[in-house]
Length: 559
Image (tube, rainbow, N blue to C red; front, side):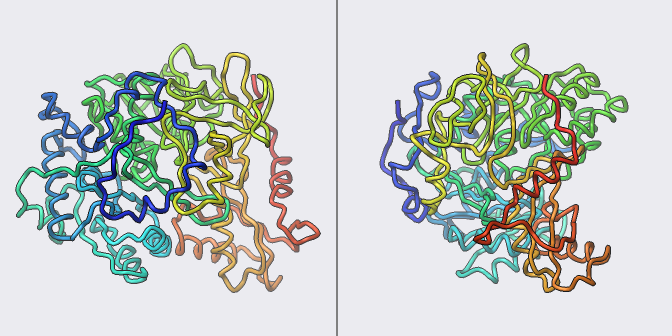
């Protein structure tokens, strides 16, 4: 069953016009769960997730815990309404306009995200670590003319706005909108706006957000998601797999710019009237301290953090913690076992994708099989297919294919769409084996994406930056195994002058990459080589470098 549709309410049709042709969309199925089948043709996700909390009598419940302060659902809604007024009345937002959001995880970022949807805008949330060069690409790629930004991140935002191909209007805010320093202009404008806002009457399949993900070409890909998609992910994984109670307090490390973080730390708790404890700098020890201090019950983070925290647990009181969820990279069995020994809690592993919006393969409780990612969650179907998208029998290794109530829609990228979506299935780029019980066992990545400490890093993007440096003649970037981060970025570089092959050059190139793109993408290892492996036609053979590095590390054994 497909979702009901209604005429679009968005006046700016830029994003809608750049959707892939319908015949290239994956099969979207809303028949798997009763909640999915009940969505009306007209729906605004911000109204359903935020305004409805007051209708249910939850206005005085805590919504966000941050830096010793508590935001109620009522305060969050009133702030979002005022921000929506600023967007429309002061900044000239027209429904369908894209709005860039830039901040660490804090209450004003959450309020701004809801405000954009309330006003009929399309939210484009970005990592706070991104540099001006990366921001400029996004501003131009989806014609962003409005931005809301944390005042502490103003330098790169200003530089990007000046470099954009069009005028970008930026308003700045503080973490809680209370002018602790410098009187940011958005905070000031909010004081003059009355509470309440006439929410945009969006169609359920109007665009709500564009999430960028890096692909193997090195350029970020914009994935488009509708208002009903936002609701759908809240009615699958948290409702039927992890479980949520209104008394829960969520916490975690993923930035809200990641769809993993958006769901885990905003959409999931607010769908059920729960609370979230937000951290701007979620280092492992700070995560554990937050659980102890706020009595958090649900933790979302990456395997890297679970590995680091396992050795710190004895120093903290974690009696309140009931559930731990992992995503962002493959969860190794030793990490699962270490966390379980330390806390008594089995990690709920989850596989998701920006293209799919959130988790679609997982298992919880007694259904967990350590080492396996899990099964297709309620609402989704998954199978293993060959290179021609033909289903393979249990025990076969092949490409993971999935479909359900969400699916991939790249903005203005038909060629990439044809690669990701075939015969109605979303091909995630992961290689898996499915056993006879429907459990999926991770084997490898099928593309050149590097997953390090939960961050998706495009090898070709890093290559492009390195190739800009005058000392670099050729380079290839891959992910190599690492005990702490899962993988790290390693660059193989042919220097223009062999005499430059020295430790000082390594640091010089690492610092250069950090200054050009988000620091977490820099190559933690650099090896200078005389030549790179290539085909007779000159194509770079990264797989040979991966095989070379893999031979240095004993493969992880599977039970």
